[in-house]
Each structure stands twice: as structure tokens, then as C-alpha cells.
Amino acid sequence: MDQLKERILREASILNQDVLKLDALLNHQVDPLLTQEMGKEFARLYAESPITKVITVESSGIPVAYATALALGVPLVFARRKKTLIADPDAYCERVPSFTKGIVTDIMVSRQFLSPSDTVLFIDDIIANGDAARGLIKIIERSGAKLAGLGVVVEKSFQAGARTIREQGVRVESLVRIASLEGGKIRFE
Ligand code: 5GP
Image (cartoon, rainbow, N blue to C red; front, side, top):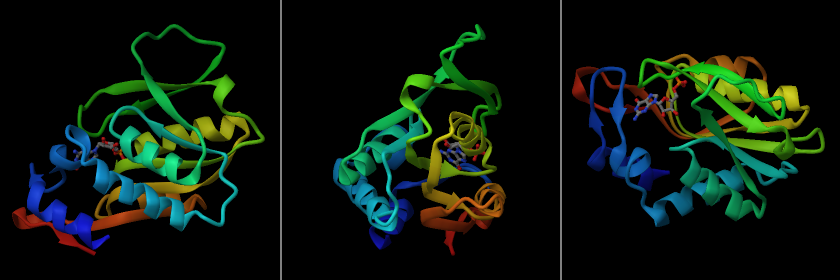
């Protein structure tokens, strides 16, 4: 998506050689028309899969996952971040380290919203080390649902997340791949 690359070059800022600040596009402010284009692109990439639900993790994955679900005509489920450690027998839970916050959070999906008859498309904003994605993939596997693939808006390909998930046999599609942030410059693949 050239349009997305241009917007990233114009509106993102580099925090350090590992982290790109994308508040203007993904993590604080959202451009509905651009987000809708992202959703259409994911829907096009996965058009051959019999997707019954789109799934993401709150909060930054929700707008693009919503746009994808709308384009595919299926419901959107978002994993919630849990504040309490009380075990919930009605939910699948996983503990995931947070890349940007440096803390561990629990994510949960109610059993009610994932079943073995589902084929889910997992959409997320950014992939770095892949911990958040692996957590939700474990939940999807435990539910018995099939995973059509993962769609991420920004893949930082200099970090291992997307590669290791592909090595697990999961189809991963990214709209933009960033090869490096070194020297204060965004270098796309
Ligand atoms: P991972 O679990 O793949 O290491 O990190 C994934 C999550 O951390 C993303 O959903 C995103 O919210 C956040 N994240 C990782 N890298 C970046 C980054 O460079 N910039 C921003 N804004 N968020 C990031």
C-alpha cells in the first residue's frame, strides 16, 4: 500500500532504533478512510479463505480489524486485556509481555465467541517480537477454531515476530514491511 507508506513517512516518528511512534495513524488517532482501505486490502488478500470471524486484541487493533470485518461481512471479536487475575472458567486466557509498556498483561476471549466451526482471520496493528500474536494464536488453537492467517498493518521485519509465526506454518500478510529504523530513517523492504 503506497498510500500507507507515504503516510508513515509523513506522520510517524522514530522513538529509537526499535520503536516507531504511529500515534497519528494507528495508536491514538485513526483516519477512517485510510483504515477502510486497509480493511479492504486484508479482505482481498484473504478472499479465498472461508472466514467466519475477524479477531484482534484491544485496543489499537480494533479499527483496522473492524474495517476488515466490515469488508468481509463477518463479526469482529476483540480479545480483552484483563485487569484481574481471577480465573474465568468461561474464557480462554493467555499472559503476554507488552513490547511497548514493558509489562505483562493477560488477554482473554470468552468461550462463547470462538468455536471449532469458526475460521478466523487475526488482524493486528504492528508486529515486533510476536508475543501478543502468539498469545492470541494459542487462544485460537485452544478453542478449536481454524486460523486462516494473520494480517498486520506494519511488520517490523528486523524483529523476529512475523518470521517465527510464519515458521509455525501460519500465513502472515503485512501491508507495510519496515526493514530498519537505524540512523533515524525508516527503510521499507
Ligand atoms: P510484539 O508482541 O509483537 O512484540 O508487539 C506487538 C504490540 O506492541 C503491537 O500490537 C503494538 O501495540 C506494540 N508495538 C510493537 N512495536 C511497536 C512500535 O514500534 N511502535 C508502536 N507504536 N507500537 C509497537
